[in-house]
Amino acid sequence: MESVLHLARMMAELHLAEYEGARIAKISWRKEPRPEAEYGVHFQKHGNRFLKMACCETKKPLMGEISVSLILGKEGVEKSQRVPKKERMLKNTGTTWRCFSYAEVLSFVAAAGDENSIHRQEPAIVPGMLILQKLLTERPMTRQVEIRFFHPLYCGEELHFLPEKDGCLAVVKGERKFFYRLWKSECSDARHG
Image 1 (cartoon, rainbow, N blue to C red):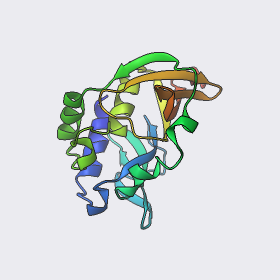
Image 2 (image 1 turned 90 degrees about the vertical axis):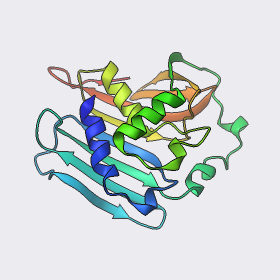
Image 3 (image 1 turned 90 degrees about the horizontal axis):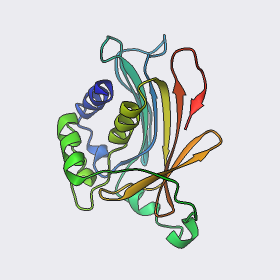
């Protein structure tokens, strides 16, 4: 999905100092931008620990709109460990989806111009934009996606999907990593997990 990589590049070109150590909390993507959406990268909210920005490309073939919420600083990764892992575990592991390799992550961040060191250090955190890109590649009829992240997904972790009422929960060894919802294109307005 070339449009996701294009939008990631547009955001990376800002070279924000706050981006170092930040992790994605939520991604909302649309194949076709809303009528009121304007080309470029726009800040929607900016605080000490939180940043929300929107990015829009209005011309085909790279057209798309994305909104990204970031938890700023390295403490964002550590914060997820406050609840003991044993208490966060699910019994059902679901259907195996994939395992991201370190080489795959490095290739994506190089292509996107992503300078956040959390994607280069070992164990590297898989970029949320790479996850979005892979979901869309496998589901080409998607017109809209929302991903909410709970805990970092690291390279080498085998990811499983558990279908839920409104989407799909992604887990690794029973630990929740993210939840996603897809809306299909064409004649269907149905959500797909």
